[in-house]
Length: 104
Image (cartoon, rainbow, N blue to C red; front, side):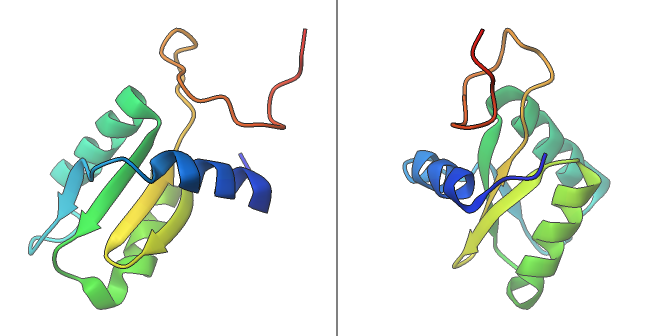
């Protein structure tokens, strides 16, 4: 889903109080890390990923795993990436972004 600047800003504000749930360390973007990010996105929709290593490539890596997992890279600030993916399970959906859902 393509997000507008307003929607990205909304999600950035929602993520402000979140703690990173996945750490990307020396081993890089392994299949285990990718699975952990995928699971965290399914559970929480909006997550933070902290880069412990690979700090020079953080934007490229964040873009890579976001695209691979069909998620939106909201922003990379410092060594933290904010990632969003709408839950595939309507019962688990926690975040309703302004302008993306039609009223019934």
